[in-house]
Image 1 (cartoon, helix red, strand yellow):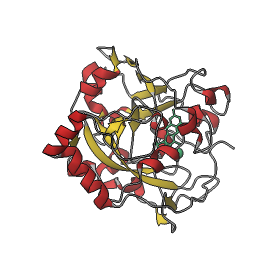
Image 2 (cartoon, helix red, strand yellow; image 1 turned 30 degrees about the horizontal axis):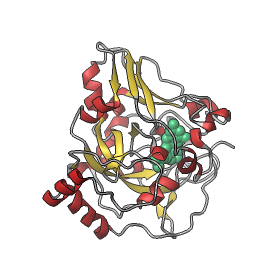
Image 3 (cartoon, helix red, strand yellow; image 1 turned 60 degrees about the horizontal axis):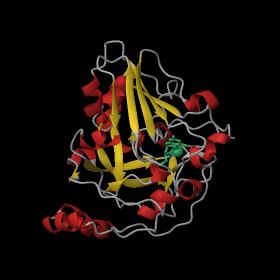
Image 4 (cartoon, helix red, strand yellow; image 1 turned 90 degrees about the horizontal axis):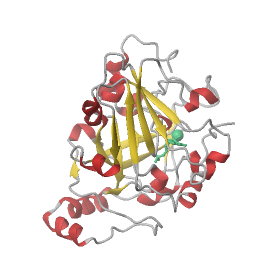
Length: 317
Ligand SMILES: Nc1nc2c(c(=O)[nH]1)N[C@H]1C(S)=C(S)[C@@H](COP(=O)(O)O)O[C@H]1N2
Ligand SMILES: [Mo]
């Protein structure tokens, strides 16, 4: 068994929207700017990692953000899949406490005219960092609402000028078993590799994730830089990325390699295409008791359905 079956989550409280609205007021208001400069900590769980705010964070255009109650910082950081730090949802928070995310570089190469290695500080300055509230739907049939910080991956892609042969993009997670104890377990072939078709990678919704809740990414969520592809199952969004490679042929991702009958390359959220071991029709929002219906493309159909015209999404799952 590779990914666990959907398990029942005990209902607990999620941040009422109004509370975060106040927090946004704090983040984006004039008084907030002063408070940020003063370095006051936001409320949240005690965390070994230094919690650093993102300078100059701005709200995203309405098309790139949903208006649903947010999951809490505690839920988002403690109910997590990050197999490099263990396969239980609670493992990554505990096991990633001393993970070193600086210095950090991301090598961008392959079918590009201008291959380049970006330092993490280059990435934080490459484009204006926006707060985008996205739905996250895990293949295990749970979901969350997360206030990410980042910008469209297309901003980075434009800098390296992909060639006409760049049909797909690979994303490689760090491979460092000394720091990532889960990599001693051959549950997946390491490093974790994910991939997108070039038009998916260029889509404005595809986020280069640098933070959440207005701060730099917490370690369990893929610090210091990750991908967030909100219309696909969560596993497509690779964490702690060290290499982005442009290629001509469809990559074999870590999950396709481990269970090709269960995990396809596209992995678009689709309530009509069941996982071979469970239904994808419904999901449990973390913090809620009753299940809700899963939406086609996780609710982003209007924005992304045209990427797949003419494809049989049952066959190309
Ligand atoms: N490198 C790496 N990236 C990963 C995973 C992983 O195990 N390793 N898990 C994936 C899965 S299955 C999900 S649902 C999301 C969960 O993390 P998030 O809540 O921080 O998005 O991360 C994805 N990215
Ligand atoms: Mo997932």
